Length: 494
Image 1 (cartoon, helix red, strand yellow):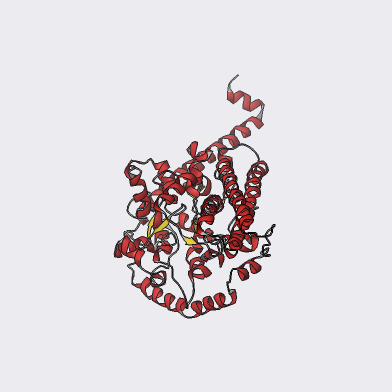
Image 2 (cartoon, rainbow, N blue to C red; image 1 turned 60 degrees about the vertical axis):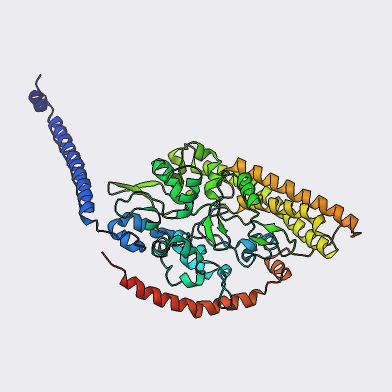
């Protein structure tokens, strides 16, 4: 029986074929329109691209060519997300962990230490922190700006890196106004990833690695490693350098510093020559399973997304825990609830051991102060100070990195274990010193259980420091902004 005969016997069959045909034609039309739209967007994007100057610092100028990336980047202004321990919300770490005030006695971190917010807040956070001083005192070098702004490569190109580092932080203030952004990581002509900070290139060069030989996947993490690393200022000119010559581990970097006899400051209470870790995220990550499996930083913190048929990298650089479906679940098939549980279990354990180290180190500093006041000699105290330096460095290598150890939980716990071991060994030697000096045991130590009590004990007048910062904001900062606004208008617009 022919189709026509079947239709005559069953009229509904004709209508069915008609509607099926209409649906197929409609779907084909949608598919064709999608292809045309995607091609049209690609052509329009190419035609719309305008030239960008070699060291263009303004992210909004780049955003004219790459609106999706720029719009997602602006989301780093959002400070609403808070995971169990991290996120984009401001956290006053000295309030949360008062022992840090004692551990950093004599160093600017004892004044204020907050969790960094999103990249778009970098300039404001740098300006406002008490660590950069006020009208009365702002001793920091311009090197402190190195990781905060797209203006830094521009000024390095103008002055030379060495001369930039020699400048004072306060003198560079009117020039450094655009926060972390496009130009830090991208070539404006090709949009290829590139390194704009000489310290990383110099460190890789000493390791015998040429940047032109690294893979694209390696480069995706190395652009982050320009800033999310441990570094130090070479004396006397504050030249920025990475201590990678012996390797990325806490042990190898400590050995590097020891050979140089380098220290960041002398502890006010214990008199130990101390090291301050910065934010060795890259180094800790390099010891973990994600690095071993070839997972790069953007895979978790800047995953791909699709809008209007266009695939691009999400520049809302943030905690993966605020974007589990696009970050973790690309590889892991567990539920979001289970993945969060796994992360928090590891962070809980790292924090538990980290706080044990903080308690031991804090006690050792306070007991060392008692030993000095009781007549201890430099010969007696040298092994104690060496152990204290090592213990706090190892604690800080984990504590200063983001993620509460999650970038490499096994290595984080190992390093914290060695920190506790050294701190307790130092305290054991102190007990012998107290015995020799006829000091009654147990040694009485002060109540430093809150930030205010601890800061008062080490001699910080926080009222004066805050008033000085307010004066800085009312006077110097206003002048900076006037100069910056005038200069921004003279930069060539495309």
